[in-house]
Length: 68
Image 1 (tube, rainbow, N blue to C red):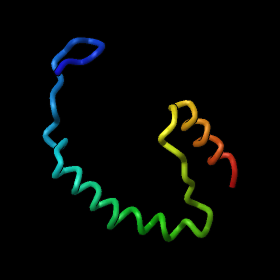
Image 2 (cartoon, helix red, strand yellow; image 1 turned 180 degrees about the vertical axis):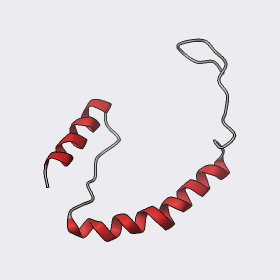
Image 3 (cartoon, one colour; image 1 turned 135 degrees about the vertical axis):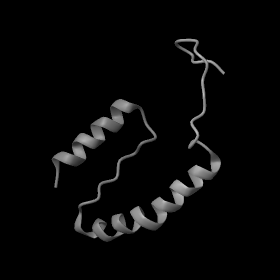
Image 4 (tube, rainbow, N blue to C red; image 1 turned 180 degrees about the horizontal axis):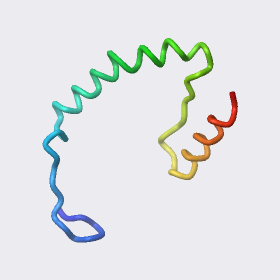
């Protein structure tokens, strides 16, 4: 596979595997998610839709940071 812009060969990092992804997700679920659940009732955790255009995501991030 080639880079669309530069035409250079693409490579896969050693830690970019299905197993590594599974480990990262397991770590998120066991260590990060409980922290989010703990602080959410205090209004500290903000949710932003990351499935839209970058400009929209950034707008939501800024909006969520400006209100408390």
